[in-house]
Image 1: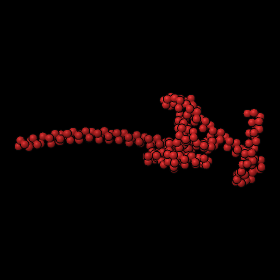
Image 2 (image 1 turned 60 degrees about the vertical axis):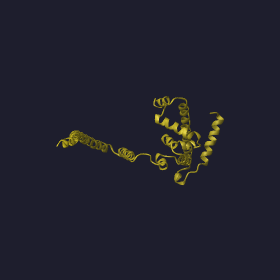
Image 3 (image 1 turned 90 degrees about the vertical axis):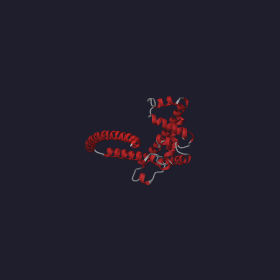
Image 4 (image 1 turned 180 degrees about the vertical axis):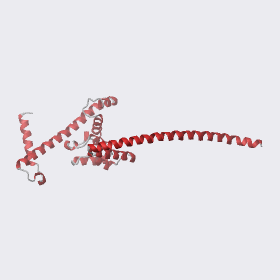
Length: 239
């Protein structure tokens, strides 16, 4: 950056700091220097968010240029190769979002940065009305979580899938909040439950074998009955 560019940046930064209004709750009992420091770093943090959002848009655009220029199998192989400094899922989500709406959207960079690649992709998969609703919500600076999006597009998961996801989420929450001692105790409990389940599984296998044998026996008996019924009219005619 040239000296004139640095001067312009400093002037812009000073202007943003001066115009920033913080609530009394934020600055209560702080010294003037503390307030000034807070305002400065708020502006810097906001600039960083905007830069991050611009990077998301630029990354999505670059990935889109790759995908449209190669065959799908090459594109998929690239996303899973480790060459990209992101997961394959994230790369594919960014391209899907870029193709379906980001490319033609005027969503501010700072708002775009607050939304995950997964949500950005899901927004592109809903109908136009719901998509507009979602994009407008992002533009207002509200961000957009998976939960927010689900409220608009509806939950497409089956009841069983939702129940499993809820149980997994609850388990993860409990594990994160548990102490080491509680984790050890829980491990021992799960280990015993696993042993009991294996025993039940073995008993169920034995029952299945027994049921299969009974079914085979019934099928043989049914076969004999059919033969008997088939021969009955002939026997009756000879009497």
